[in-house]
Amino acid sequence: MIQGLLEMGIKDFRVLDAMSQVPRHIFLDRALWSRAYENRALSIGYKQTISQPYIVAKMTQYLISHTSKRGKVFDRILEIGSGCGYQSAVLSYFAKEVFAVERIKPLVIKSRENLRELKLRNISVKHADGYEGWGVSEKFDGIICAAAPKEYPEDLLEFLEVGGKLVIPVGFEN
Image: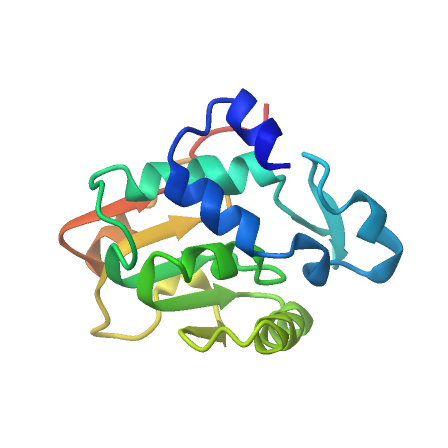
């Protein structure tokens, strides 16, 4: 998987290292384990998918591109649309705290189980609408969103610290 990411243009060694540390198969049903490291989105149930490794790597690379610092680049990252927790696990290598929001309750439960199994303790997962942030006065120096709204959600800026970074795909499906 890592060699494939390199060939597709993921050059930040920090991202490649984090991706190599997170066992993607843990986030999938056992029936899909043989396909876990393919560069494709796979079903996690509830009409949702785990993002393909390239997308996780590319979004993470965009998020941390402002610095060459190793380790915890951010104090607090908000992840919107955390699904089964895979990208949360990758982001945990770059933040002191990751706050993951998911709107589908069974996926919140699954995500918590997956992250607990990996003993990742700097991630909190909440069942909520991610576009409402984490809490009323919470601010983040990084926000990453898995969902692709048709228009730029300006309301998310209120959750971003001054100088913070937002990575979100915007546009139509095709």
